[in-house]
Image 1 (cartoon, one colour):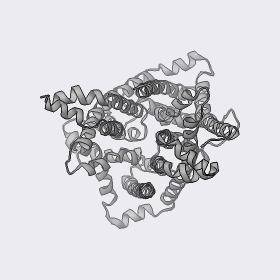
Image 2: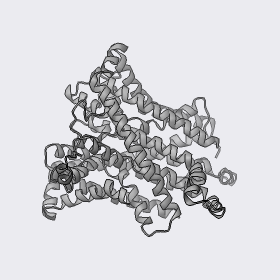
Image 3: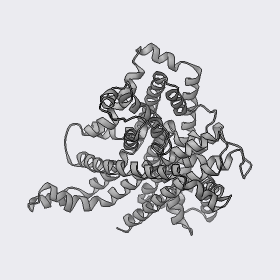
Image 4: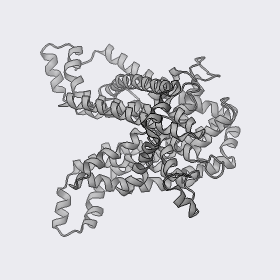
Amino acid sequence: MLYLSIFVLIPLAAVIVKAFSSGFGSLWSSIDNTLALRALAITLGASLIVAAVGAVMGTLVAWVLVRDDFPGKRFINALIDLPFALPTIVAGLTLIALYGPDSPVGIHLAYTRGVVVVALLFVTLPFVARSVQPVLIELDREVEEAAASLGASNATTFRRVILPALRPAILSGAALAFARSVGEFGSLALIAGKVQIASIVIYADIESGSEQAAAALSAVLMLLSLLVLFSIRRLGGRVGR
Amino acid sequence: MVVSRRAAWSLRAIALVYLGLLLLLPVGVVFWRTFEHGFSTAWAYMTTPAAISALWLTILIAAIAVPLNTIFGVGAALVLTRSNSRGKAILDALIDLPFVVSPVIVGLALLLVYGQGGWFGSVFLNNGIRIIYAVPGMVIATVFVSLPFVVREVTPVLREVGEEQEQAAATLGASSWQTFWRVTLPNIRWGVAYGVVLTTARALGEIGAVLVVSSNVAGSTLTLPLLVYQRDSEIGGQVTTSVYAAATELAVLSIAVLLVMTLFGRRKDAR
């Protein structure tokens, strides 16, 4: 507990205290400007898109890895962990290399919102896939066969039998992906350019010495991501029961 | 559910194309860009004094942060599964905080506590200890962001293993220390190992938190990820071989970690 306090709790408390240090009014005034509000909106919007796309694609990837069989599957399975192992700054650089000014494929996505979403999809890829995979392995196939023998089509079986079993895993994976996206810095530091992502605005504030503004935006960002996490967890809990 | 051949093929194709476009192609391009002007050019950029010292500092920070978090992680996992203390639920919720908080906010937080004019900053500075803009601050930042991995890997294993073997050891007269070393630890070793690998990967690659508390001086407080960032900003967005070379150096280091991770995964399945 002491360890946790020294490394985690006291520093975080300091941010909250700093954010409120000159009253609630000044906290609001440092948030209530177009730059900070835009940064919050862009960050949350991108994170929601990433969580949604990630949930669908992660489930699909997990399905192929569990139910399908093809040469090279083990390699693909190991590949899923690449974003966890690859430093985020390298992840960002890879996207510049591919979509940047001298792109070999002629797609110039760098420094736009599009590339921000791609970068976030890259770093959060393992969350949904890795949380769905074990559940899918454990899933009882007899229930599916029973559904099929009772005349259910594949689509119905998937929607009524498989999806409900996977939903908690998908939701918790998507929640992790969302939380990660909201705070992501490393992979975006090089490629976001003029797209004002919250973490980059905070960094710019720190660099220019306005710790108060940085702390205020940090506090709001933490609050928002905790709120979303909490509601996703409740949603997952209700469905899971 | 029996999927038709055609559906199975198209699902497989979608998954492989998605992974290929998102993961393989971009990483491949970085390697290609690193060596496009020949191996020796890239090698020269990888072995400049700044790069060598950044490599060692990256390894040093990981070498401090990983053992600290491993010891804490195993201890916290034991508390979460084996004790009935009242703080358990709070501890459980708080441990995930580093996953939720943005690394940049972590850096800011450390600045506000240990920096000049921070809560404890003057205490350390008066005793001649620099934390912020120095290596200790970078170590603390790394510990912070990589804290939950070992706990989260070990807790489910401890739960699954159960307490019976430990109780049996205790009835046979083993001290709790002996029980831990002879019974508990061998049972959870793969969970610990996987947690350590994840912690290491994160510690090697961390940039956001470390960037804020580092002074970014080559040769003293520059890690490999920071070197990539610095080389990129020096050239002003015009990314050239030096940046790619530093990135490849870092990527090779972490892909080695990924290989170890896959090996452990195989061992876990084999069990």
